[in-house]
Length: 494
Image (tube, rainbow, N blue to C red; front, side):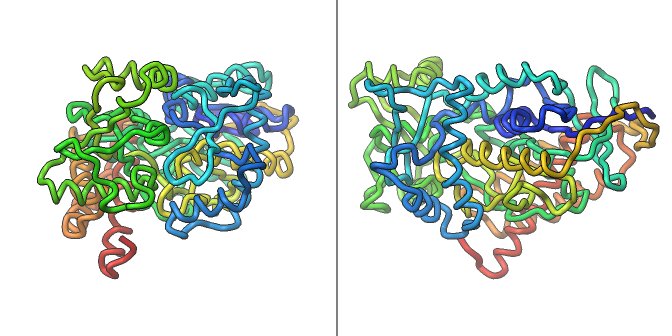
């Protein structure tokens, strides 16, 4: 097998991957792998915005830190949280330099909105499609890089450490391509497809976490899964579109099956603006009290023109489903949304495997604690991917000779994968750990998931994207349920 050489390989093309590439030394030869089209990533689905202290007259770092700690149940990593909050505003300003079109006030300043869990208006946004705006602007910059090669519709099927370098097997257009590099950045996103219903796109199968785990990298707090309270309640589709936190930030009410407000019963001060995990758990209490899983979000009392202009994408999506949010409440229900745990990294984004880095949702920086504060995810993606780039710039000199080398990798030949494994795992996860864990179901589920994982790890299956995704889903579910069962034995933190 011939292995083509690169200095850095970035797996993933969301905000973390793109921003990392832009901050790497231009002398380095870089390969970026995108599972689907470069525009398809969880980052592009982010609606609300990016949180940062952009108005020091009304806000400060200590307040942003305090809000993040409260939302995260004080389980946050303080060192990395300070890095996030104190360095974040610089990266948001960099986005503006790269052409990101944040909404503006009449005086030209960036318009900052409020979201659940925040004590100040600090969310920079572009309407209700901030993630797509950021990704699009960064792609426009990245494609100009002469030292970067982008492989779209490409799947990582193999990642191994070979001395001080890494070997990768990338599958594109029915062919296996082999590469070697000194530094790998995993920016592979979340784990949404481990659940029956998620706001994540189809690519979110936890591949980076699986590869890092099997290389011996430390994985931490994978059971810190966030369930967003206001996904559109479409029980027919696996991928549920999100109704942004910002809708509640602009005054929307949460209603129960009788279309009555209820959050005041559980959160008399914060009401609808409580952090996501709190709201989701309150909804589960109200569901039990009402005997109904029907919930609504109502912003129809606001000026219709304001709603349409502030939330054009959400308004359009909801209208396509038969609801006019300027005139009536819309159906919502909690849904898997985000992962706070992941591949454990230090303040420079480095994992416990030398030369391996992780950024964005697949990484565990610890900044979010047990529950992510709204709009801190894009901030984390920016800050820590830049710090990874700065670390690589210091430690990874550009090669002078990029002549391909010879090597070996696992043969891709093998048996067909049994059907239905991922579907079975998703059903197990939905029953075992949705908003609050069901410890009995988690124990039963862990036994079955362990069987599936061992079968995939030890079987002689053909090396295909389907096989890798099944293996990733099984590995992620195995780690999560293991943590949940362990927590249940000590009647843990829930």
